[in-house]
Image 1 (cartoon, rainbow, N blue to C red):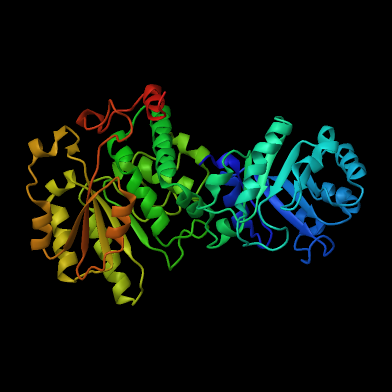
Image 2: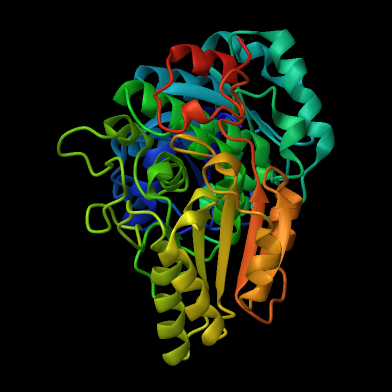
Length: 462
């Protein structure tokens, strides 16, 4: 899903400063609904004074659900509105549209469920945008009216230059009917858990994982160094994790959060890409990877970036770190979960097995490890460097529960994460190193070799 097409709507949402910052990291517009009890039965949540107090770089796109919009135009102009949408059923439509234009704002007309598209024809030369309502204007959380999506094509045929928006009842199930709109306005679905980027990812996890892979490649191409194989191979796992875990990008140190430990720190590009997408920082910062004074170094530095739980680089330390966290949480009687990501190559390390034994001794059922079982490491294939034989049996013998899955199946990843383990849980995720770039896949040489622009083109199918 192209984030540039999504416009957050705040009909019944109270915006805090931190949430505004999060929205600015991912979106271009902010849709603001206004009621005054004349066109709908709802009262106004966002009068001009409140809209003015929203300090943001987002384009303020105001929807006046009012009978007499003319009296509000200049007030919302002074509040920072750049676009104002009025209803065809409102009073003084033509005069109001002229006033919007005179105030150097873009004018839009709203098509309600009962309104025919032809109703906007007399005003086509006065408007830049059209807002199609896929619910009855007023309350949020209404059921999507599928028939309204057909009006997108009708408006496009009427005037192909118009920017077409659709609003109302849109979620991960109904968005497929709206993809031909220029902007898809979402409110209730985005903010139901106050974690809008998790909601976006749930719309299409394949698209999200592809976006993360593209971000990884762009970072490594810009840095001219880094580790693509594991980063690309784990994109599906990271996508599922960030739609599953309990976390709050606005409060990285939230005491209720799940703890994510990255043992194989060299695949931090996929961790950084995930953190940026899910709202911890702006994706633009990703291109600073490995640069002087960047927060995003070639191995994660815990104190450099809020949201990182550990500093990692030396392989084999992660399970011990995660086990310590899990034991501390248990002693404090806290329900948080610890998730540790490890590589198959790390199984060569003796300190890995020290952590494995520690977790088994204390039966840390709040610890889940996910192994990137991709068959490669720095200088060759794992089977040649240090044969791992039957890792499933090894972990079971060491007192762990074990699940072996396809690391590119969201369904299998989620099922494994939901498993009711009675011992520490190891999920062995079979992945394809450099997944998505055919000429790099399954080749150990790409463990730590920077890709070129060509890899991005191949990923995107060109």
